[in-house]
Length: 166
Image (cartoon, rainbow, N blue to C red; front, side, top):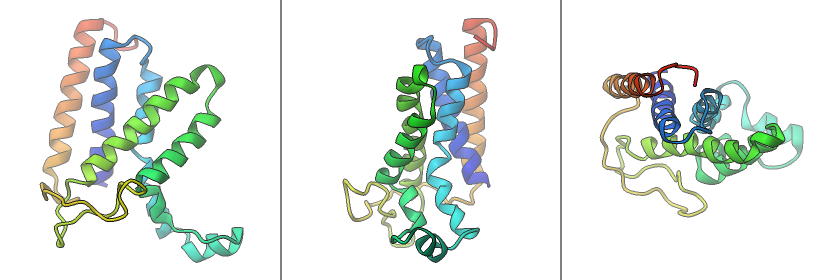
C-alpha cells in the first residue's frame, strides 16, 4: 500500500506543479493524473480474478501484467479518454498517461535481484532495462519523500494562487 500511495502522491505533485503554470489543469484534472498513476496497478486485480477466468469468459488469451506495461497504459488511457466528456478529452488524454508514466518510471527504479526491471516499456523494449535499484517497494522512505514533495507543491500553489480551489 505504501507503494501505491507513493505513485499517487508523485502524480499529484507533478500535476499540481503543472496547474501553477497552466490554468487549464484544474483540481479535477489533477485527480485524473492521480487516477492515471493507479492504472499500472490494475495488474493486481489478478489477486481477485484469475487470468484463466478472464480468458475463459472472453475466449481470448489474457494476462493482467499487460496493464503494467507502456502498451497497457496506452490502451487503458485511451479507454479513459473515450469515457471522458467530449470537452475534457484532450486534457484527459494528456494527464491520464502522465500519471501512469510517473508510475512506470518509479517502478523502473526498484531494486530487483536480477538487476533488471520487468518489461515495463513493452512494446518499445521487449526485455527489462537495467535498474539502478534505488529502493524496495516495501520501503517507507519513498512515501515520506513523495508526501513532502506533495505538501510543498500544495503550499506553493496555495501561496501563488491564493485559493486552493482555483
